[in-house]
Length: 419
DNA sequence: TCTGGGGTCCTAGGACCC
DNA sequence: TCTGGGGTCCTAGGACCC
Image (cartoon, rainbow, N blue to C red; front, top):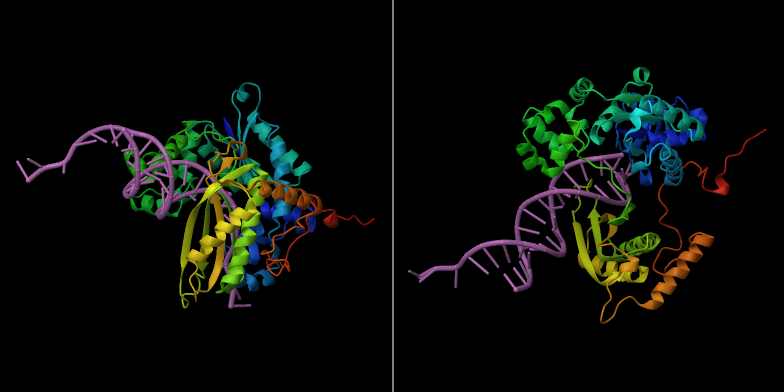
């Protein structure tokens, strides 16, 4: 059996942990730059606030309905997520952290000795007590079915108490008939359109489609999904591994049409990626840069550009990454266009201890020592060393007007109790 | 005025090899 | 007149996830 454990309205729930006055109150959490809604408490959902709603369009509704609005606080969410995952990992030797708020657990052979239903209830109680985060648990014979079971547990809390198990074929078919096709894990907008066109509206109908059709239209992934939904394990647990791509991308608060400002952004993104690469002890040999104009301003010239450059040797030196990223930027930059977003992505990632040596050239050994010294210093005193091209005046600070304290990761933000 | 960020997997087709 | 067959590797782009 598999379990999928999912935190309920995770970001919104995180905001409540150290601010219990918010229990029962509507909450929304906004994306970077306070752009759009990316998490909603049940109360906020009841007001009809959709996922992805632009904050400025809903500002009035937030005020009228006393909806509490937060900027996203990834430092807090990340730390609480780690606590949740650590506790979940004690329930089974095989676990897979699937996202910041979801975890698969595998219970091979457990059913002989444990009542999984009770185990699920135990998880919920412990998580509430130890971390303060509400969770839902779905059990089933495959990962895709565990996802379905989880959805049922979350949708009917009063009937399931947060735990639902699909353990018979009868329950499986009933659950699949209840699941709308667009809600199936792995079926997105495009597949939904195609499936509805051939009269497939729920997960059960999907499982009745011929393999050929699925393979042709949804690749091998679709076929695995079908088998998983039939109760035949086809989507395996995955080991945590090093990242294969690392990206750093941002929308700007206003648009820029000059190379100077874009160049500064790209340089800051490159430093950030260098740090991340070194942290996971990797090198990369592909660097991509992209620029996007403002999609919402149809009145302005549109330009989307993306360019990948191969490095001469695998590297994780910020200086080398930035040199190449700047080169790419200059090649795709188009004068006169107002840009709203830019990003740098590194890929072709290899472990640092496994670098292909070169006859001529290669990483400048001085860079290695320099990066080492910078990382160590920054770790000790908190990001004090920056590169000349990076913004030192912090004029790029994100719009975060409703940021909550980092209760668990900063001494300055620690919770105070008044006696 | 204002609209997020960071990932994964799969496939077709081109480049190249013998 | 007539021009093969069988591979591998790489990458862009499309689909998906949270």
